[in-house]
Length: 125
Image (cartoon, rainbow, N blue to C red):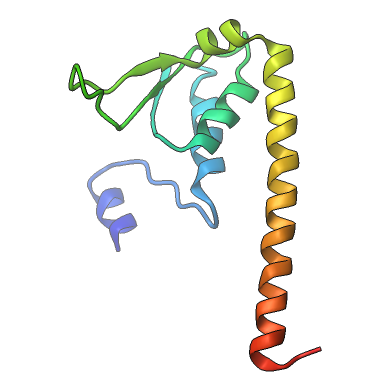
């Protein structure tokens, strides 16, 4: 319904099948091939994916936080390229690797916990 409303008003609408983070990042990377892009998001996964995929072959991607600074009342906007230059490519790859490892452990623990809960709740073996 909302999809159709915006489409009828002339907006380009992209519907995510699952988690929208990957669609948001892929769209930003696609658009950055032609021009500078600003992504409005506070999701850490989006930040990490943009940092990981930033490339000198792309135009710059800016990340606009949706949380206003308490002192200025403004939402900060940062250049993904500048952040990556500041922390370095090697550091970024290490962070991305550790983040992936954390998610693998987290998901495994989550599903093991679900399996335990279900088995105890329904007395399954």
